[in-house]
Length: 84
Image (cartoon, rainbow, N blue to C red):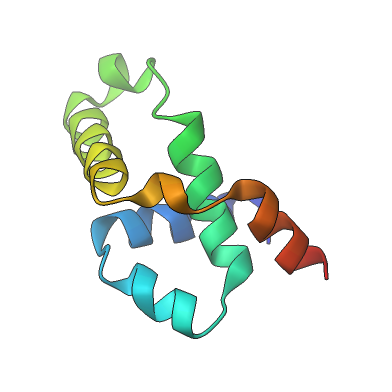
């Protein structure tokens, strides 16, 4: 998965967080890893100046992701599942 695909996947999962459970059941580790990496990188601050509405939306979605327990998804574990 290239960088653009990873970002689009992460943003789609952030927009519809109920899909995270579906991806877990389907063992779609690469997509979940993209989500975790995107959430931990956070939203680029420059986006606040270029597209404030998108910045606020992504910030709210990432905050909701972590408040709903998204930090229990281990990046290392997902990386090992993707590789193995």
